[in-house]
Amino acid sequence: MKKTLSIVLGLAVFLSLLGPISAQEELPRSETIYVGGGLWSQPNNFNPLVSWAAVTGTIGLIYETLFIYDPLKDKLEPWLAESGKWVNDTVYEVKLREGLTWQDGKPLTAEDVKFTFELAKKYPGISFSPIWSWLGEVKVIDDRTVQFVFKEPHYEEWKYWLYNIPIVPEHIWKDIKDPVNYANTDNPVGSGMYKLYKRDQMRAIFVRNDNWWGIKYFGKPAPKYIVYVIVYSNNLALSMLVKGDLDWSNFFIPGVPDVKSKYGIVTWFDKEPYHLPANTAFLFLNNQKAPLNNPEFRRAIAYAINPKEIAARASQNQVTPADPTGLLLQYPAFKRIYYKEAVEKYGFTYDPKKANEILDRLGFKDVNGDGYREFPDGKPLKLTIIVPYGWTDWMEMARIISEQLGLVGIRVEPKFPDFSKYYEDLTKGTFDMAINNFGSQVYATPWQWFNWLLYPGVTPIGKPTYSGNWGRYKNERVTELLHLINIEKDENKKLQYYHELQEIFLKDLPYIPLVYNGAWFEASTQYWTNWPTEHNPYAFPITWQGYWQMGGLKTLLGIKPVQKPTETVKEKTQTVVVTETVVKTETEKITETPTTTQSPTTTTTKGGICGPAALIGLAAIPLLLRRRRK
Image 1 (tube, rainbow, N blue to C red):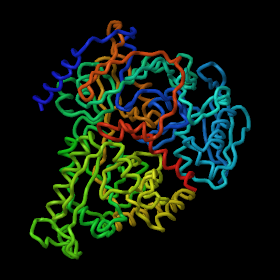
Image 2 (spheres, rainbow, N blue to C red):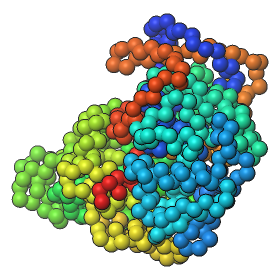
Image 3 (tube, helix red, strand yellow):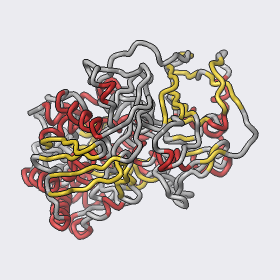
Image 4 (tube, rainbow, N blue to C red):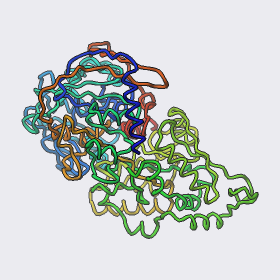
């Protein structure tokens, strides 16, 4: 590991000498925080209404939500809202805080909230427009009070949207003719603690809003500038981190033990696995293809896979094996609904002997003596497993799974298509096995997690679906349970439905939970301190799209500058080698002509190094496309 670290640092020095870097502007280093891990393409969309396409920080830093969510405490916390409550079974009332203002100084009122929601009714391309299939009316009671009147309350979905719908200013957006395809690059005006300052091909720079309404409630965030950078290599991110060029990293960083001991890098846990979990990586099995359509064959696969080996080899034990349910049990919202008895009865562990017994019983035998089993009718049994090329940890996972299944006689070939091909095969169901985690992250409600994993409205193979349930598992009772959980107000009944859902999953085992992918977090203490950790768990320190309002904002409010003499550095362009090409960037002012919105597919093609960071925004797509298919 020491040798590897030396090579990485040497490479970084070499990269920095490849060519001249032109100075652009002076930023005070003691007031500037450099962040990376959630920006994978040129920052050219700041439209909060299309969350999957927006630059990370658009929602959270610039545009704000009524509530934020703390997954560590399982608590919805008022943000723009002062309070929120169900006044009866079908009416939810929000009281806004006093003194809310937009960044241009105009007041933020209940009319802005009503306008934002009704904009999504008028334009179905907005990420939260499906809410209008069960929301009936938004009523303004007074300047600070708004009521949501539901046709059929979806209590679980509503909880999710309360911290994910960004409020936009009516006085600006009422004049925008195409709010779905509006890139909003020309001075976006929100209500948040930061404003867009400048951007270039490789970064977005935010500047603190010193007139932020929230200062009197939450205090002023210490960093004056946030420089969010694109870094296409984990190793480059490592070198930047240890040199103090990156303060807050949400990348998968190789060699964390050495980095921590030598350079004082902060991680959430002091020891393995170092990181909190962010989501569950599943092995999706195509339930519409033989023999993967057989629950017993799928169970044999589960017994043949050793997640401990996957965690050790693919991620250096920076992740942990998943529970048989796949639920993120480290978080209270998920732990509360966990059905331990069902796991004890129907769960599984690594047991190749049991895998072989099931396969023998099903009639899959090695007829020709080549070491691999054939179908009972003698036809060759050959399967493939896909992950995107370049996602190195997942590529290693695929190789390991192939090896482990080979030991019980199942021939599996790992394939590494580029992301666009992977995504096409995934969404059209034209694969055998695939590793994926796009919608399995921590939520305020496990319903959202299950609804992605087992989404009922799947399409036939060959016709794309973007809502999850990639293997097209079908179960009428699962469909019914998902609806019952969503509309049930009684928590005891809801818990019974959750238990039944877990039992069905464990019996049918449509997909195999592998590991809990990490909420990658490494921080330098060279310029900033008081980072959240297991010893000081005041925030969930992730900056991916969708996570600012789950802990990123609280982290900004909690960190403190290291007391050093004032140091001013010249803000520089980055030089990055991509396929042996040196790319130099030029900073541009934000007064340029707005560009066109990127599509969800375009935004995710840079998914890159460890997958989920670039794809968090896809979690909203299931809800968007559900309406489009009706």
